[in-house]
Length: 236
Length: 236
DNA sequence: TGAGAAGGGTACGGTACCGTACAAAGAAGA
DNA sequence: TCTTCTTTGTACGGTACCGTACCCTTCTCA
Image (cartoon, rainbow over all chains, first blue to last red; front, side):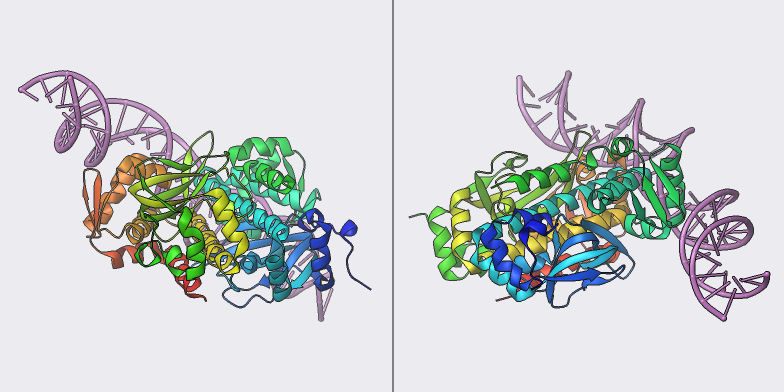
């Protein structure tokens, strides 16, 4: 009997679901380890499962012939596979694991059925989609207005929220990919953040030291989406 | 008897709705002229109506203390007020009219009721939200990877699709706001596009001359979202 | 018709970031 | 311990865009 209990799940969406709704999903939830660089949702292919993240981190990535770029970040605050609840079975975006952990996986059909049957379920998952839209909107803003240091600070803050660990595995190369900048540009910015005492950088790892200072750097681009998320999840 | 007939609406979402769903909405649809700079959805306030655009153009704008920036564009291809179908009544984003026209307005409660009652309605409106997410994702990409000319070309193409007129009212000042760049930067880029025969610029107006060339400039940032929209609307 | 406003053109120094290249240092396996 | 790969540090010229400033043209309206 490995069905998850609502009291013991870490995913915040599953936590706030009315018990009836959770019961609807529980028989179909399947605990799965998620591994670094694993693709949970491939591009333009039928989505077989949605993943409620319990631990770890997943990026929603827009890719083109010329390159790729992160457009959204999902942790234990949400799920990947939003197209399923938006009435379609595929998307041009890739969802890829960026931090090891665990997810509760549910078959597409089961999620859709539950979504169709329950208005409260639609409310919770819909509001999460809304918060994701706000997050992506903030990313548009950040890419347009902030320099690399600011974007780096914003991104580290977002990851810190979702991993809930002060130390995270991050190479400069990976950060360059995510932020859409040169790798040496990341190196310089990492030094600036480190010099200001915001982080401690080690080979392949970064430790968060001072969130406040990073929030100053990120300015308005950090906080709006986070506040919206909290507001939306607090709604009945 | 001023209720709109489905055969005569120009909004593509209303067109593809099953007749039963359209009938559900029709009694509540109210034809409204939309005026330049009019705010259809204010920030962080209860949304009273959604607007299915029949003609004209609306921008979804992210604003902060330091500035504002367009994150999405809606025309006769969609509607503004997406938070209503995502289970909430407000959003930090502003929806503002950028091109005069007309919209079919519907009270929030009526839209929500219809959304709740009909799975097919959820499908159509949900898929539109998905296409909007893809559009915003492409904007993230465009802002990160393209120079001003490219972003300008992309934006003109998107507006051209939605206004369906070769000539559109656009000041450099406004373009600078939308693209998040300096006004003189826009002037230079407009000249480049004009010199390449892509557009003809006049005081306060721009005429589209050569879409193909602009698509070359915009590269991958134009087309993905548009293809996704067509695919999604074609789904049963 | 003439004043004011709105829109557009141009210039100039400054800088953030680019593309590229190469070397040093840490980790991992033989 | 030596080799090899990954990751990080640093340098260099080039350029796209910035902030700011000023002037000219076109439109509007009294």
